[in-house]
Image (cartoon, rainbow, N blue to C red; front, top):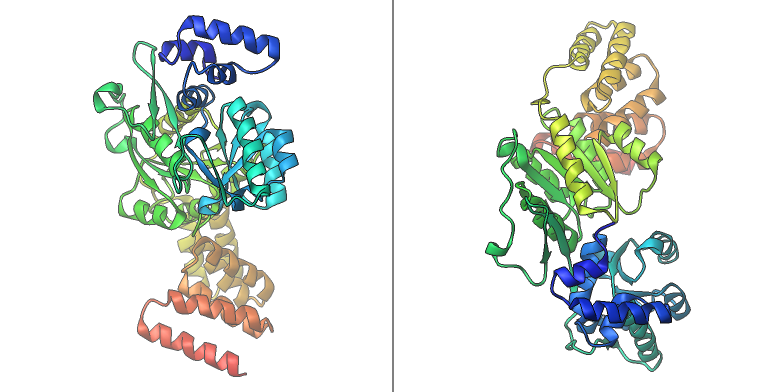
Length: 454
């Protein structure tokens, strides 16, 4: 938890100490909240109060007075639920339900329930409690009267949602500074980045991957102010392209991503010898609990696992810890797994199937993310007549490398041989897209036509 709200209000110059004392007295008598009373007394604007709340709790905020909410978004949450839980659907931009909440302490329960009922991923935003309550009543009242949208007192038609994303930063003397995304501070107002410790310029280059622009901006500003060189990507496909073009020192990776899922991105990084040394810190608002965290480490090679909503200072600290722990990792070097992989391939070529299988099992035990080791084991098992075990190993190989053409071709043939015609067609279609040249593409097309005409 951040510093007390009343301290931040006075320190940031939002209101004077006397106004805070008056509002606190009223809030205590009436059972309301400090920021709600300050807003009701016109002591501060809603935007300024939201920025303070967001700084304190480390969440993005929303200024409802400058927002427009379409009726289509409101219909996703029944009025009685919105009133009971003090929540307000804001928009469905990006395929997510953006939701205003007033109480971070009970938000996880509410978010889980709304996620279950709507079937949508939820992005929460803090709002001033009093303003939120009034907006719920007014917005749903307007919807019942047939209004296509609700607008706050200072909102213009078509303005959308007035999100603000504050970033809590530490200055060398222990003071703090507030940066609001939709009201960027001049460069001279930001703290000078601290001198990097023993990490080089390249060793402080991060890639932040998240499909929410507010979260990307929040993390970009927080990490840049700490001396990191930050790049961002909005989806898994662009993330992999950026990593291939310029390997970062660390990837801060959201789990729920469009185009390519975050866990799939992590899996591909670990499957490629060129990128398996890049540390990955995963973020999630969905896969919660220690079991998911342990699976992310064991199955996907994540160094750390952060649940949303998060504290920015915690994120920065954990990134620093991971970078320090992996600073001497360097490029991947030939491992025992690679040695056993070469040995297994040699034994397979020599027809010594039992010894080849043993060596390849050792290779996979040493490096479970090696698509080639799973591929060679599949070939060995197929040669031994272990067709269904071979099928499983081929499937694991193409799971690790979705464009692994030889494995796709072999898997399709095995599916067809065992009577899984639809799976064979599906796999050949994937192989067609992954074919490395026109000759290979034509061979796959011929196999596909033969299978469809059979």
